[in-house]
Each structure stands twice: as C-alpha cells, then as structure tokens.
Image (cartoon, rainbow, N blue to C red; front, side, top):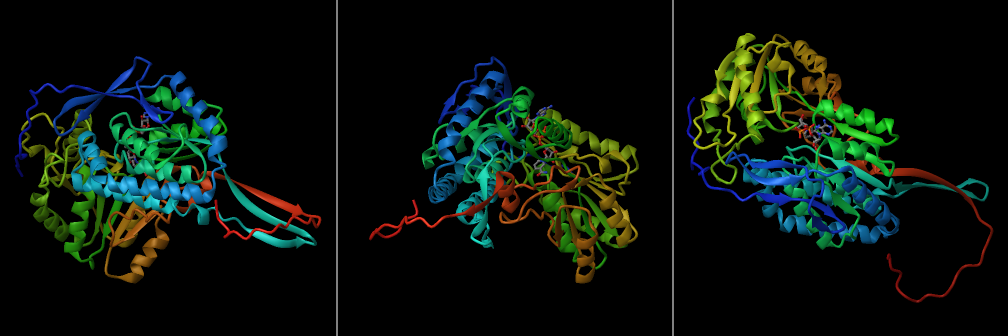
Length: 511
Ligand code: NAD
C-alpha cells in the first residue's frame, strides 16, 4: 500500500512560538519557574508553542487560592451551581468548533473526531447540570422515637486532576464537571503535550460565572504532579494516563492520605465469532483500530478471530484499508491524522518489524505511506497470526497497528482476554444472543461491547476498566464520580418542639 498525503505543508516557514502559561485566579498568568516544554503541531511536525512547567511554589499558589475559594464555593446553593453548569454547557457547546480546532492543532486528530471528543465531554457537563438530584440524600423519619436519621454528601475540598494527551478536552471534563458541581475547587494539570484547550475552557468557566480561584490550570511535568500528590491541602486526585504512571499516582497519593482514582492503559480485544456479520465486524475493527490514529484508550488493538472467521475478516479489513485517508486533521478529506510526537510515531512504527521478527504476517505496513513534509504521520498497519506473548500482543502500542490473533474456540478467545494484564474495554461480534450474554458474564473487563467496538459508557453510567487499567475503587464520571468527589455524612437528630413559624406570602424560591 502506498499513498501520498494530500496538501504538502511548508515546514520552512518560521513559526512564532506561543507562550502557554497557567490559569490562576480567573486569568492566564505566565510561568515563573524558567522551565518550559515544547508543544508541536503534529501535522506540520514543527514546534508551535512553549508551555510553562510549574514550580512547587506555583502549584502551592494554585492550591492556596483554591483552598481560600472553597469556603464560599461550597456554600453556593445547588440551584445556583446547577444554573452555572447549564451556562458552562451553553458556552462549551457554542464554542465547540474552536475547541476542536485547538485539539486538531496540538493533538493532530481530525476535526470531526475532535468535535466528537467535545460532544462526549459535553454529555458529562450535562450530567453535572443535574447536581441537585444527584446529591439527594436519604432520610429515615422516626428511626427511633422522636429521632430522625439522614444522610448528606459534602464536597471533599480541593481536588486535582492529572490528564493524558489523547483527550485534552474530554478527560478534564470527566473530572472538573462533576467535581465543581459537587462543590469542590479543582486544580487541573493537563498533558504538557497539548495544554491549550484547558486554558481556553478555563475562560469559558469564568465567563459562565465561576468565581475566581475555584478552578486553576497548572501546566507542567512531574514536578507539578509530585507536589499535588504530597500537598496536604489536596484531598483527592483523579488521574488518567499510562499504567506505569497510574500505579505511581495511586501508590503515592494514597500514601499521602488522599482518595485516588487512577485510570491506566489498555489492550482492548475484539472477539469475532464465525457467525458474526463479517462486514459489520470489519467496519468496526477498522474504525476502532485506526480512529484517532489508534491513540485512544478504548481503541481496539487486538482482534481475536474464532475458527474460519479469521480469513474472511482479514480479507474484509484489507478491502477497507485504502479508504483510511491519512492527512492533516484540518483537511476535511482526512480520516486519520498524525501521531502526537515524532518519537511516538517511530516507536509505534517499530512494532511492524518486531511483529514480523516474532512470527506475525505483515498484511499492511503503515510505513509505506508517503509523507510530504515533517508531520508525524504513519499509515494503518495490519498484522495477522500474532502470537500471544509477543511484543505486539503484550504492549499497549497506542498507534495505528492492529494485531489479529487466531483462536480455535470461544473459550480460547475469552481466555486470552481474561489472561491479559489490562481490562479496560472489550467487544464481541456475533449473532448469537446466548453467547454474547455468556461473554458479558465471563469476561474480566470493565466495559463490554456487544457488536459495539468502543463501548464508552454514556455519561450517566461510569467509565473505568479492571486490572491494570484502573487503580482505586471508583470509576470516572457518572454516579461513581459524585461519590468520589463527595464525602458521606449521616446525621441523627432529635428536636424539642420550637415555635419557629412565621407568615410569608411570597412564592417560595429556591435560592
Ligand atoms: P502519561 O502517563 O505519559 O501522562 C499522563 C499524565 O501524567 C500527564 O499529565 C503527564 O504530564 C503526567 N506524567 C507523565 N509522566 C509522569 C511522571 N513520571 N510522574 C508524574 N507525572 C507524570 O500518558 P499519556 O501518554 O499522556 O496518555 C496516553 C496513555 O493514557 C495511554 O496509556 C492510554 O491508554 C491512557 N489513557 C487511559 C484512559 C482510560 O480511561 N483508562 C483514557 C485516556 C488515556
């Protein structure tokens, strides 16, 4: 396969670097540490920005302001917090194209995919608009004679979010929307690779009326993360990223006495049974493996075919590969953009040779894509007869390399999924409802698709994997996020009989 990327880019043009600072007290502020990191436009393959890396002191300032703001923010009525979330929803929706353009420029994903990312984040904001209902407690009248018992949930305080490069807008929304709605103050440490969307969204939060200090964006690296992990005034940490760092965050955050949810990496398997609709399965495999250049934690990276489904599926996937148009994310004809950095692209590409050396058949080699310019592009690769235990099978490649493993039976296929160290998402393609139901029962994975390749739950369920894909007990967004960002309190009360009533002819108001 050999394709040329349309619209060559002129990398000789000098690009003026944008200085990317922090968001503190309702305004962008420049970094003061003297440490910075590069931000690239992956489609051009050149640096476009320089992001400030926060010092311990800058993190401390953000946490101190958040702590100060917490007293009054937690006292804001549920009605007002809900109203504010509705306003945030309107502003994010109104500016979705602008946010998507920032994502395309710094991450590289194609514009339609970036719009999809914002749309899925918006769903979580919409869920948070229902905060008065979500925080309803329980009440037991006359638990004992003259005694009532009731439960309430209160915000944790200052909470922090540390997010990955692959969803620079949506994953922060998974965190700050429920956290703020619950009455917490939030310090966000976005990925240093694509930080600008977070600063843009911070402006929208301010415009919506969020008080200064309630939301901060601290850009940076391990220095900022380590300070958040140990800071005594940070009560909870939400993390999404790779498994090695997730484990580190969980171990160190909990050691410092914080509640921690740390979502890690993935190796998502899609099982295709012989009775499956092969065209539908092939469409799904191509979309889920190569969408967003495979840089999704819910991407399908291993397809396990059972029996004679293998040859038929490989043929059907091969037929579809020419339709995967690789190119700059702002070109409407592109279906797949570049990878995040040159180093990552080269690492992903190295799996093609490693796969061949370890016995796989290279059906399509993405390195054959002809690229004009310096963009971090790689075409779609397809490896067949990949053996469990080889690097291509074991590693989270996080790029457009799909491995196909052949299995003899359903039991062998499910065994592979369950033996894998990750347990984020999985899917089965079959026309047999009984087998699909058995799969949902058998499989040790947090999110399961039945003829659905990327089963990211809707916002009113929670998102999270099992095994090395999640450290901690609580999944992201949905009901579990409301639990994570609040603490329970149970009140047992007995009252004398005071005469507190007064005449008020006004229509009762909520605020
Ligand atoms: P990453 O782990 O490299 O970085 C995530 C965050 O951790 C970033 O903010 C980064 O600055 C910080 N970080 C990196 N190294 C650190 C260190 N040594 N100490 C402290 N902090 C550090 O992840 P990434 O490359 O940005 O994102 C891709 C990974 O995220 C993939 O493994 C993907 O599967 C995973 N991911 C998981 C989910 C999920 O829901 N489970 C969702 C999206 C992405």
